[in-house]
Each structure stands twice: as C-alpha cells, then as structure tokens.
Length: 380
Image 1 (cartoon, rainbow, N blue to C red):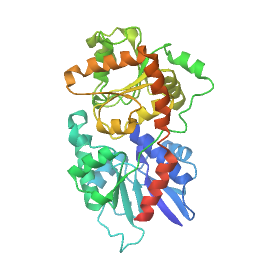
Image 2: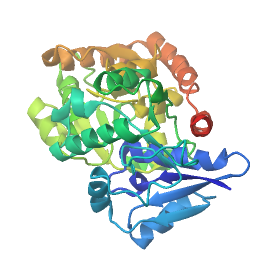
Image 3: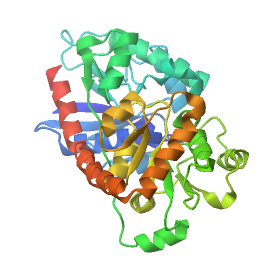
Image 4: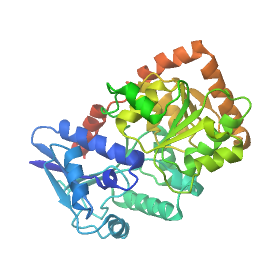
C-alpha cells in the first residue's frame, strides 16, 4: 500500500482561514480520488482530543492519523529549524508552508518525497499587512522549500511568476488551484437563516478574515463615499484576524452610519451560502492574494463580483467580474464606490455578470485539483 501523508494542521488552527479550507477540501478529495493501492494518512500536531475527533469527522476514509509529539507553535519552530526527520518520512504533501523539510534524495530513498504549497508571496510584496512573526516564518519555510522540496504547488500562474523571481524553483513549480466547497450550497431553510442573520433585501457583501491586507478599510470608505449607492448597506462575514481591524470604528471614522454596516462574524457554510446567494453585489477589495477563493464562491451563486486588480485575483476572475485598480491608493475607495454603484444600478451589467460568474466558477473543481496532486506525486 502506498501512503500519501498530508499535513492537515491548518484545518484545526484557531483561525483556519482560506488555507484551512484548502487543506480540508484537498485532503477530502485526495481520499476520494486515491488510485488503486494508495491511501491518505493525516499528520497533525499534538492537538487536543476534540480536534482529532473533528478531523476524523471532516475527513472520512483516512487510512490513518498520526498525532505528532509537539503542539502547533512548537512544531512550527522545530520544522523551521529543520528538526523534522521523523515526520518527513515517506511521501509527504503539505497544503501550506508548514512542512517537514529536510535534506533527502528521493532517487536513493525511493518513496521519500516532499511537496509543499506556497499560497502567496505577500511576505515579500506586502509584509506590512502581516505580523512580523508570520513574515519571518513564511520566508524561512519557503527558503527551506527551495533547498529541500521535491516540488512546490502554487494556486495561480501569478504566484508562480512572483515566487520564481524570489527563489528559482523553475521546473519544480506546479500550478494547482482551489475550488468552491461542495458544502457551500443554499439550504432548504434559507429564508429562516436570512431572517436570523438579519440580511437586508439588498446589500453589498464582503467575505474574509478581518485583517489589513483584505482591504476592508477601503471598502468601508467606499461605502461612505457620495458615489456609492446610499440605500444599499454593507454586510461583512468572516472571523477576526490580526491587526485589530475594528469595522465599526472604521465605519464611524468614515462617516458610515451604523445602519449601513452589519458584521456577521464567523458563520457556517450554510449561512455563508445564503449570504452569497442574496447579495446584490460581492466586493473583494483585497490588496494581495494568492488565489482569492471568495471570488469564485460568490460567482458560483451567480452573484455579481467587483474585485481588486491584484494579479492573482484577476487571473482567477478572468473577465467574469468588474476589476478595480488599487493604485493610486488614496482614490481606491472612490473607484470601488463607482464600481459598486454601476453594478447595483445597471441591471444589464448585473445580468451579464450573473451569467459569466457561474461559467467561470465551473472552471475550478476540487476533484481535478486532487487528481493533479496525485499525478504530481506519481511524476516524482
């Protein structure tokens, strides 16, 4: 039996974020698409028993689950220092840069290979939008990947080009994107959920972890701008991140009245599907991304999308959304306001986007991603 050992620690992180969702979905589909004679084993830090139980529920069909001796923080420090001999054995796939990267020779030690996923180059391009510790860890692990990884997965060609300008991975790079979750579907009790969430009849939706690089400050300022549609409120869904992004404080500072902004916080997939499906327009103002999964999620529901001109987001959205330039930064809110107004008040444009969006979203499929990942390991 050939075993693919997948590092799934991000799935149970305090703030899983997009990488946690990516790791969960990819692992689930790796299990579903495993070739004959192959199985998937999960590898996780010394997590509490409740987290281990949740993992086995989220990932049915695992061939095994290895719980390492170190908690997450200590494990990341150990792997950053190269103390990962035991965890690095066999065929390892890391859905993030948290990976047991050590010197090895896959030709002499048949079956020993390590593949790492680098989701973005934000630590180099926009370090001010991350914590100093996060920047240091990411850079250190990418450096180790350059030395020791057999292959590196990136979600877009934009990230591939940026990463290759930092470290020459060249033929070791493989572009494998994400997709929407199969659990992100509108439930039968959608009306009740919308009422419980307090969703207005018309609203602008933003989704993402509340942290500086997501550009929410610019969207809030845009909604307070005189060019924005005054009768349409802003709804924000997503967990708290770092950086003390105070939505209500930003709204007050921008002159946006309390009735024009609603914060849902972290919500489950069914509620998120309801929020996506009923929004008048979805806005993704992020300053830097590696993929921009919420864009594809919103498009899958036929919701018109307005997004930033970040290279990876433009690649993912293609021509199925309205692109807004982030530069010059001081007038970014004004351009966002004008784009939102245009979509909300132009039924023809909104209708075109509602058709183009689902077509674009169907280009991304988790089963395809999993099969490409198995093929990558087979090639190695």
